Figure (spheres, helix red, strand yellow):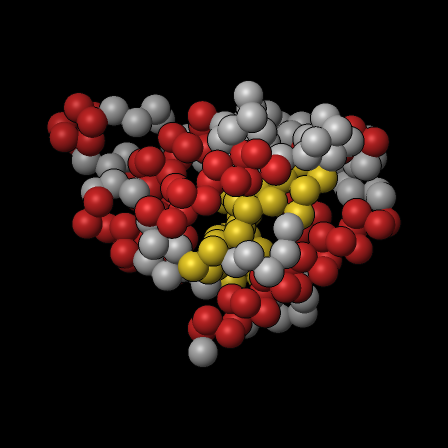
Length: 186
């Protein structure tokens, strides 16, 4: 049974990407678990802090959960045509110390999806993640793409994905990634 850790690249409680991540967990195929983790408690990266006290406890806990999972699903907003700062900051911390990168990210199946209220989706942010994920040695799944523009019209007042065509696309996307994760587990 594959376990996928999902993280949202936004701290906003009503984030469309948090909603999309919850919907991904709901449509995951039988036998696949998508566990949503938070980056909210991760401080700004500070090399002095790392040198004096080491990796903060919330970072270490998330690193261990990602290392123990079979895959990683990142739901990213797009800020100024790129990666949100809080999400990049989390990955920067999660890659510390550098000697731990292979344990946390090495050959880990990873995929990025995203939702935005704008008309263009998160294509640029998703593309901006690729060099970061390549540098970390992940196994990026390129078998599908989940870009959700106009998200403000697709989720209901309770934050549930109410648009059936988008839900169907998400289901296909998550099933494809889960199959990739399962195949990599061997």
